Image 1: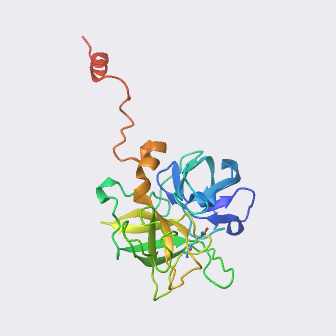
Image 2: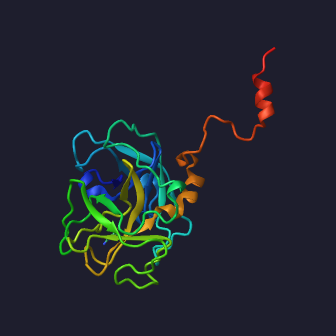
Image 3: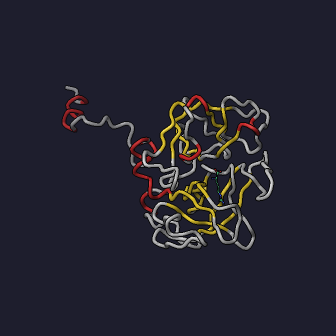
Length: 254
Ligand code: ARG
C-alpha cells in the first residue's frame, strides 16, 4: 500500500497500490504521484489488513516517475519508488514479484491469459466502500499489443502498445479507484509476474469499459536504467570499467 506520511490511520492514509520489485524498489503508477515529494509518502508491505497490529511503514528516498508520463492521455503511467532502507523480504506476504523479463517477449501476456488484480480500492461503483482487507479478482487479458480494440474505448484513448486491457465482464470483476499502481499479476510457471499496473477505466466493472493497465513489458528498459539491480543479468560483483587483464594482474601473486 502507498500511504500519506501525514495521515496516521492506515485505512485513511492509503491512496494507491504498488508492487515489490526487490528489497529496495516499488513499482507503481505515475498518476498516483503528481505533486508529491518522497517525504510525503510511505509504503506498507507484508500485511493484508490495513491498520493490522505490527504493520510498519517504510520511508521513500526517491520518486522516479516516467519522464514521458502524460496526465491527459495516461501514457507511460509507471513510476519507481526507491526505499530509504531495504525491506526484509522474509515472508510470502512480503516477497518480490517477478518482472516480465525479455524471455517473455513484448507480446506477453497473450489475449485470454488469466490474471489477478489486487488492491485496497473501492468495492462499489455507486458509493465509497473502501475495504481494510486486501481484495483480489481474477480477470482475463483481452488484448495483445497490436489489438486496438478494448471494449468501447476509442482508439485514441486505449493505446495497445503501451496499455493492456483486462476484465471479467460477465461477473463484473474489475479494479477501481484506490487500486491504482497495484499489480495485475500472471502466474508464469509458479512465479507471479507483473503484467500490468492498474491505471485507468471508465467507471468500474462496466461491461462496455474494461480496466486499463500499463503494459509492463514495454517499460523494462526504462526500469533497468534506473534500477539496474532489477535486471536478472546484473552482476553486482564485477567492478565495471576495469579491463580483464588488470583484474588478472591484480589477483596474481608471485
Ligand atoms: N485511476 C484509478 C485509481 O487511481 C484506477 C481506476 C481503474 N479503473 C478500472 N475500472 N479498472 O485508483
